[in-house]
Amino acid sequence: MSTVKKRRLVAIVDDEKAVSQAIGRLVTSAGFESETFSSAEEFLRSCRERRPDCLDLDLRLPGMSGIELQQQVATDHCRIPIVFVSAHDDPSSRRQALQSGAFAFLGKPFNDEALLEAIHSVIESGTLE
Image 1 (cartoon, rainbow, N blue to C red):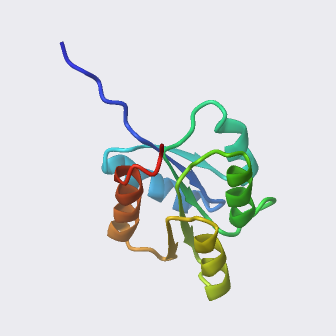
Image 2: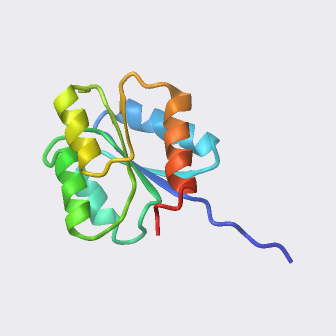
C-alpha cells in the first residue's frame, strides 16, 4: 500500500500571461502544483476553495495591487507565505513588501534558481502552519 503525497500548491498572480505561464511551468517542473491568476480579485475568489502553500505575487496588477492583496490576506488571517516577483523593484516598494511580511522580493527579470530557492525555502521552513 503506497501513500500518496499531496503536492504543494504555488499560486501565481501576474497580469502578464506569458510571465505567469513561464513561472507556472518552472514551479511544476520543480515538483509543485501551480495555478495562475491574472488579478488579485481573481485569486481571492478562488483561494477560498484551496489555500495555496505559497503565493508568487506581482507588485503592479490591474485593480488591487500586490501590496493591497498582501494586506487583504493578512487582514483575513490567512497565513500564505508570499514571494514578490516584480519589474517595479524600487526600494520603497521592496521595503514595504518585506516589512509587511513577504518572504522574498525578486526583480524581473528574475533568476529561475533564485525563485525556486525562495519557494522551496518558504515551504520547507514550516512557516505555513
